[in-house]
Image (cartoon, rainbow, N blue to C red):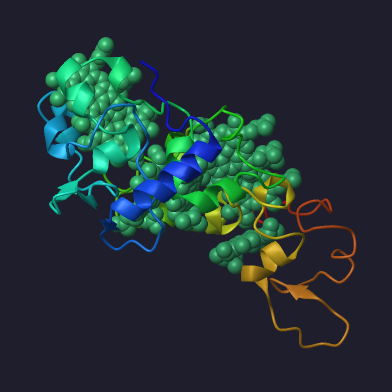
Length: 262
Ligand code: HEC
Ligand code: HEC
Ligand code: HEC
Ligand code: HEC
Ligand code: HEC
Ligand code: HEC
Ligand code: HEC
């Protein structure tokens, strides 16, 4: 049997329009449009409870997951928790057969997630982005589908601070233990980077020195001088950005220079 999220984008649209009319999908605290679950020919929704029998390793940690409360009304009007099936497709055939071919495993494909998080597709299509649509890393490289906050290693509901640990897995050089860390690293990599994508090189949140002025803006008292940290920068800022002008090259942190020079 073929198990596909959708046969084609067009089929997806048709399916979502048709089923949208028949089903009311409501999710706690959601402000997002929820589309239909992935399609599996001949299968119907059974509810997340049915998965516990054979996948207790996953269901036991699932109760506090970000996606644990996706609900759907069936034709009889009964509200079912369809969380598992909203990513894996309807499970009626699978719970009988217990075979791989009867259920969808998104593996590293982002398509399952993009069904609901439609804006992420636009973000990952920007000129500078993580290679997610190219299939080199997954949404689940950074986000956890089965336990806790959807942002992996999230802990408390702080997407921002959590991100540093997530990034460290693949970018230890920027996250490393520096003698002089740039203090802002405590707030997380997302102070300066948009990990989904950006129009700017290196996925920076803004271009040029305005990136740094978010935090290092100082009221300029004298007419001609540009002061930062008590130092006259008037001749420096014309040479390039704060980090390319031969000045603060060790922007993530330095082991030798407290002003992050090198
Ligand atoms: C009767 C036991 C049983 C139930 C109930 C069950 N599963 Fe499974 N599931 C299995 C088995 C067995 C496998 C592994 C098959 C294999 O390794 O060949 C599996 C594999 C999977 C996979 C991985 C498929 C792959 O291609 O890697 C997913 C995803 C999955 N199940 C989701 C679910 C969901 C969602 C539910 C609830 C709707 C559910 N399962 C209910 C027995 C079950
Ligand atoms: C937000 C989407 C999402 C939800 C909700 C979700 N999963 Fe998954 N699941 C995934 C993705 C993506 C993968 C593949 C990547 C991975 O293993 O992390 C996966 C993998 C799996 C696998 C295969 C694991 C393996 O090691 O091969 C099983 C089994 C599974 N899920 C069962 C479930 C069950 C049961 C539930 C509900 C309690 C559930 N999932 C809820 C997205 C989801
Ligand atoms: C069926 C629709 C649906 C699918 C499929 C889905 N999500 Fe979600 N997602 C939601 C909803 C609804 C919320 C908001 C939940 C809440 O706030 O309680 C959410 C929340 C999130 C959040 C947290 C956002 C925040 O502001 O706190 C992340 C991160 C996330 N999803 C990532 C993913 C990833 C990665 C996948 C694929 C593995 C995925 N989602 C699949 C509907 C979905
Ligand atoms: C390289 C790591 C990384 C990858 C890959 C990634 N994300 Fe994220 N995502 C993040 C981080 C970090 C945040 C928090 C951003 C912030 O706080 O500014 C986030 C935030 C989110 C949010 C909540 C904020 C929002 O934009 O609504 C959702 C939903 C989300 N991601 C979905 C996805 C989906 C879907 C994919 C795959 C298509 C994906 N992410 C891939 C790191 C990643
Ligand atoms: C699963 C591994 C993985 C994770 C986790 C990850 N990245 Fe990446 N990152 C990559 C890959 C792969 C590239 C692309 C490298 C390339 O194109 O040469 C990349 C590229 C980048 C770049 C651009 C580098 C360049 O030279 O243009 C930045 C900036 C970046 N990542 C920041 C982050 C941040 C911030 C996080 C945490 C939110 C993060 N990454 C999490 C794998 C990862
Ligand atoms: C103060 C802002 C800032 C913060 C915070 C920040 N970065 Fe960067 N990052 C930059 C700038 C600026 C560049 C571009 C450097 C260049 O072009 O030489 C960069 C470049 C990168 C690159 C590309 C490789 C390189 O060194 O050129 C990666 C990967 C990266 N950052 C990852 C991270 C990770 C992971 C974190 C969090 C641990 C992080 N960044 C936090 C500003 C920041
Ligand atoms: C989100 C806020 C934030 C952003 C953005 C930011 N910084 Fe910082 N930076 C800090 C904080 C906080 C400190 C530590 C307190 C201080 O020294 O002002 C710091 C310290 C520094 C220092 C060390 C000052 C010293 O000599 O002790 C330098 C140099 C620096 N930042 C340069 C930059 C550059 C260059 C950029 C842009 C690429 C940048 N910062 C972006 C918050 C930020």
